[in-house]
Image (cartoon, rainbow, N blue to C red):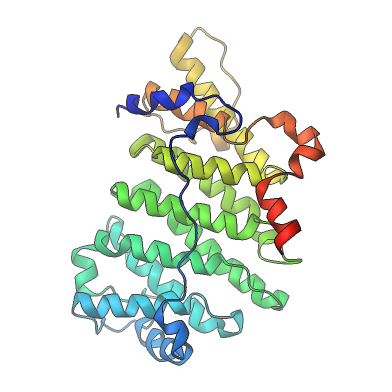
Length: 329
């Protein structure tokens, strides 16, 4: 892939705006509640998703019916954790429907929810909307029991596994890649944005969601290079999370892997090999082009700003997201 059109962002080195000053970051509002939030949507969700999550053939035969059900699922994913079974069924339906993007696999046991004919015929038509609705699953629920929060974490882990599978094996277009990266950014933002709820899902998911975010991001750099607005969104949020150890750990891990591959491209096999753990040996795809490696390395390196800032509490305390919490919450 030729990513030369992005080279001009490399000359932007002003600390105030960064190298993406000509682009705006993308909003991460999440899926929202839709119209059902105002008309007793809970009862509709309970009545609809139970049937959809069963193993029976799908009753949905038209695009309009699928679109309507997606609005029901959108609201269902935002329900309180006390409605765990409904939320779980919504996640099962979303995962089953998104799996239509994947190559055929051996039948699962128990069978997953059936995929409607319109979605099976054109899964990419609905994929971006489903991925957007899944933002709601990661939104922290306040004043919930530890048991319910653990159940939420299990559902989130399931979606993260699916996100990794989609990045690995699905034939995604630019719109689907964008929606997938925005889902992972929104998930990380929902879990890591201050103030974090005490004993919330972030404690169980923080490391995993960041790991998947960076792994999928590198795959996107190989297959559908992210646009400057996506890079700016990643950078802005990573700077607001950089005081968290899991963020710097994942950033270090990815930066080292890209550096090792870049050195190999620049100096050839005679240059001493940078030691990389067996677990991370395949993090950068073997057939990723030298240009994509170079562009990804440079951008990832600048994703958390100047790491030395972490030694200066007065700088970290003036991170925009932290200031919003202090003065407006």
